[in-house]
Length: 292
Image (cartoon, rainbow, N blue to C red; front, side):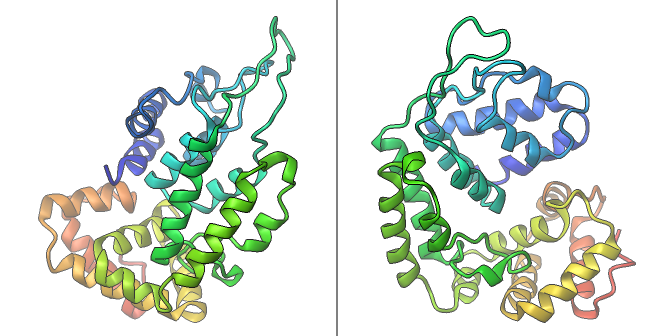
């Protein structure tokens, strides 16, 4: 269900880390049909990990303290693909590129036995290939390095895949490279226009994540600086954001607007429509100081 990742993020940032983990566990588990993670008590307790995305990143390759026992209960490929469907974020690409699918069993610390992550098979490799290929064909995933960091799309270049050691990825590497090359060649030449036509609300919500939610609830002064950079360097993305927000405002209900602003823009306001209208004005004027 759309929005589950950012609902969990909201719960995490409001102090209930156990519930945030449970929401994420359920969302991924529902997609893959099995429990994805062991409960990482030392990560949810205290202040070891502050940022929610850092917590999620720790679950994928991480292990229990003083142990080689992984948090993963299901194959990485299957879990990663489900996470990507929940949230298309560049940090998940970085984790994928660094992952070793063939890590040997090991024991450290207080381990009395050797541990290795659950093994990946062809189905798990296919899960990764399929979700990334679909994103590339829709224009949601970019092959262009210049789209980082303010272009509104996560980037995965073919050169970064080429740089992965064969021994860490095995058959996944040539398969993903070939399918992504085909998908990029078939992707729309004007991806933002295509996405506005097909899913304007999705574009608007992703923009709220990009501008407000992803970077720890940035103050409005920092938001203004990022918006200026987007307008200067990525005019197609800026234009799409304005159009998507206008389309959202033309149809959104009051209750849905409150939820969107709360979970996707990290602002608790009584009138979501008024806040979104204020944002539309700020995007036109560049003045965000009046935005709550």
